[in-house]
Image (tube, rainbow, N blue to C red):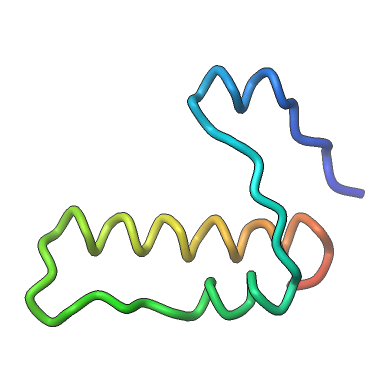
Length: 64
């Protein structure tokens, strides 16, 4: 079973909750809309969001 997320810890990190359907998380985890001329910061942001979407699916037991 997944460890529950601590809302206070997340808030301390400046994060907010976002609940998505598994299908939306799956899409988000595999999609990058960066343009060919995207700067490294944009590419890093996209990678971070895709990773978090994938991790959320994994934590929920919906992905290996």
